[in-house]
Length: 151
Image (cartoon, rainbow, N blue to C red; front, top):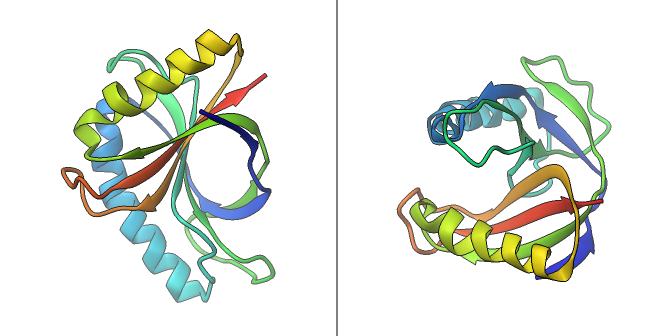
């Protein structure tokens, strides 16, 4: 576990209220559409995808707020279907996860949450997944940084 502060960045982003099992389908539809919109608008992609969750539930039945964020360079007037906004820095506990989505919670989230609890940290309610490398849901080469905001 690493404790760090994330950077301030500009992102192209919509928000959705969805359930955990819906994330894969919503992102598979939304992310390519956002990428096409960014390219049409002349935005410069400035980093990997970041999914920001608020009050992520422990079950698959409860809806939560999620922001699908594509970092972009500032300074271009945007007139598309989404919003450009600042993604504020957070102090977080972070862990690098490598593997398929199937074991993201058991091998990524679980050990990080245990380490946070053992260290006596309190969660802020915000968590992030930073997709440094994405090969597909079942790929073992996926590299996802898991971040839990701390109070």
